[in-house]
Length: 298
Length: 266
Image (cartoon, rainbow over all chains, first blue to last red; front, side, top):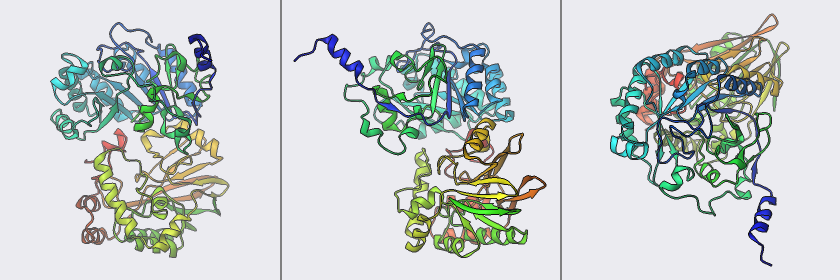
């Protein structure tokens, strides 16, 4: 018997989803500027840009409520991402709210980090109750290789931001996307960072997720690139995938991770409380996290 | 679960990292200060020379031991130390260190490491102390000072029914107490200095002080020149003995949070 397309869709939706048990809330992600960014990178997995407000900026009030709720649940760390977090007019106040509660990380392209902002971050890095990690995205060790992905003029502006941070004593990390199958030349990034005044450079590799704009740049996922139930039948599965110990809050609700916020089928509820159950992990992007043992946090 | 009973003064140390000379000095110091029990929170091997010398002392001196990730790896002859490094340079050095320790640890000592308990409990007065290696949740979870917030500590103490959680694994000692006196004590490591440019290593003393548990970090001086010379004679990387000679960590730095990293030289 051959099923109609409608019947096939009905069978698919009735099939139980592959899920990962939720261990505990270690990491809270706040999509503080939603999908609003000052640049539009060609590999962005959530297709952020200056006019993309699919996820809007979060209010300081919503950030505070989410953070307080997370602290009651024993959260270990709070990360801010977007979009570009430093586009938020109240970002320093929001970071202060967060640093009073837990260690904090910020993912940024660094372009908006002026000497004054770097000083403000340096002060917090030195004196806040907990650690402040500033992670700057840079996808090539030179203008040509970076700007073909991130846009014209980005390399220069990002390097300026890195220099400002280093001068202000912030122990920054640089995040580098692995754009093809070859790992980038680590030493060239280290050299660049030393030239920019970073005394103890750190880099983190980020795999590409073949969704959003990246799906059009190289390719989207193949149908077979999904996790199987037997993959997850190992003891450390819930620690290996960040959705086993983390949740992401955006203006539009709560999601398992920052990668899947544009996937309505992965929206877990309006509040962290509602998102305490198992996370669905049947998206092809989940297979990237699994294979790379990848976590968005450092 | 190792249950050690009740005391009024207890010495706790972690991470010997094959530093058998500092181990002897630490035990002598703790005894001289009147410790009623001495507890080791795991990671006997790695980094230093002659692994058997450390395990022999851990077994023969009056020490209670908890298993660390390194002990689990060496005890079960696993492929690596399970330290969780992500940086290729760190992994390279970690593997040199691990392969050396595994090859030079006697089979009987490996059996002993394999059988160690993974958690323990003791009491100081009526205060309950949970003993673990990394965290109560995972043997290789790092609890750093700058990344272990009060809300998380409260959550752990509630979950574990503990007044104090004693751990190691990071190699840097610190303590954070909640307003109600409960907290986390990272006892540090005696295998190498805590990346502070000094040559002393540190352990912790817990003592009953009226109805509170007071903790004190104790520096230990030892014959570091002898240890560094033995490391060189064994062909271990010069980067390792440089740490013993200078007090600055030279490898396995990527795991440090920014705040802790900024305090070091490298």
